Image (cartoon, rainbow, N blue to C red; front, top):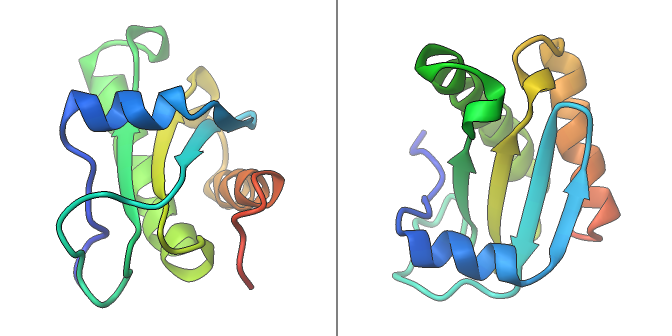
Length: 121
């Protein structure tokens, strides 16, 4: 299974952050914006792109990389199945991302989608 299409450029991250739509959970912060503008993504997740970030508040480089890996795995599970198409998402790591049980991290992401009204069953 191919991975979700990614946001890679700083400008794309800033566009999502500038939209002002975000949901905060103990394990992560989810930001979302309107319809994606970019190359046509794969058929597995039409119109959905995702980016990941972790600041130094999360920890050293090893901790930040581990937090991003956990968020990527959670996003592959939750966003692929339940995220509304035609949107860009940025998932931001928090200090709790590293210690939060994986099942609760999945719940945090699904709950954030619901709060943004972007959850599809």
